[in-house]
Length: 310
Image 1 (cartoon, rainbow, N blue to C red):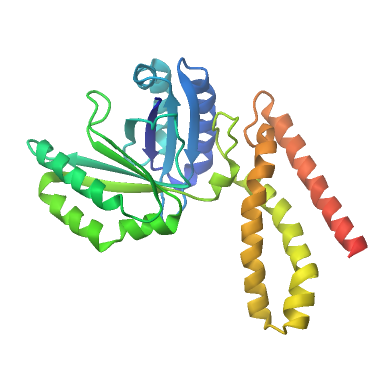
Image 2 (spheres, helix red, strand yellow):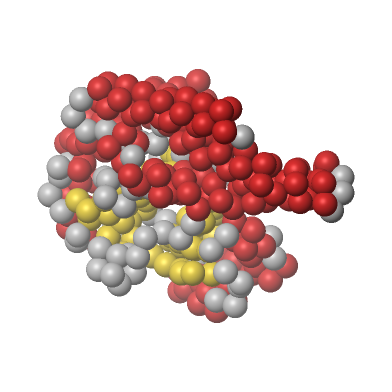
């Protein structure tokens, strides 16, 4: 059973690129640390998620604690101070058996309990756990008490299959009533949610390095252009428009549904085979140029084929 460190960080908007570079360097450092398994990085996805969320997995609790207390990590944190707003939230939790990875949507909820109210809070926690177990789409729930010297808060991590199901639970009357019941027991409570298209680009063989927005855009366009083009040629125009005589707005809407679905299916397949470019190691500049060149060549070939044969 592995252990994960969950770090939530608010970054100054104008320093996002600096933080991304810093995080990439930190990823390379922690990847060689004893006991390290993998790292996952979830960039902001406003308005639902405004923070960066970093999940670092280690083989044992001792390995995780050793990294948290290391001089290497402290030096890296000092270097990131100019990029950040407020304090980092750092939590350490034991993973599910088998090291199950986070679901497509997850929420990290941290709570500071009033002194002397710990026993009452644990009773309340069991009550809300029972209620949310009935929530549609729930894929997992972890609850961790404070760890002396590492985290002062109680931490709960919820995993759902979709953003809609997660948000439905967070906004549900049942949960709101339970949160109100806990107010006399708590001093501080906040939840942060992680989701977004970055889930398409997680290469299971990589160390979970920083995701570059421009690379994600390149791959999405690589898949989206032929999907939209072929849909229009084979289905949109001849069937929906000419045979069924559907209005253009309806035709376009149906096309978008299929385009998004097919893109969501195809992008992870392509991204996993471009892991050497998405998360380059060694000569980063060479990998970036080579990958961008290959994709631009694919763009040109697609345009030429569609221009000449359709």
